[in-house]
Image (tube, rainbow, N blue to C red; front, side, top):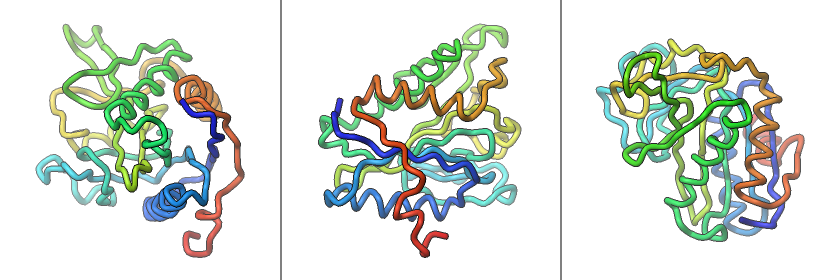
Length: 232
């Protein structure tokens, strides 16, 4: 855990993916240089697919459906769109212990703790990253993915983060093999019968973040990287 305050930014309007990449790059460099605080950024994107560094071309089933971006993060193909809460984390992993696997595990635990606030039991699997929900009503051993996780480190500062399905159009996931894992479905809080608002999810994320990562959360209206003319 860390006692250093973390800036916490919530953007209510959809953010272009190119803008998000530029902001993350700039803030991560500033965190590494010691000239800016760590940042957690909660947002949504317009419908799009992103390809991680391990993405396989045959897992992009509908290449012309939505824009496709090379994310530069770990992992494979992921969908982003309205109704999904994305949390981009620009955190100093070295100062937080320097264990990348433990950091990814903490991100998964952050999601699991958040889901618990809404009565949903999230689980991890040793052979695949992300957070899963058992769906016994679909058959023995059935499970769906409710959150994807993928990060990149630059000078020990993380970029990217996680996406939690609150109430997205789940049919949009049909254009890819999510995270390159066939044979499993995708779910959301709404699909599980939990109708919650974005502010409710954001509050649960904040409480779970404090408990797991420590430190105070300092809410900001914007950040210099986003306010810059370059990113408007």
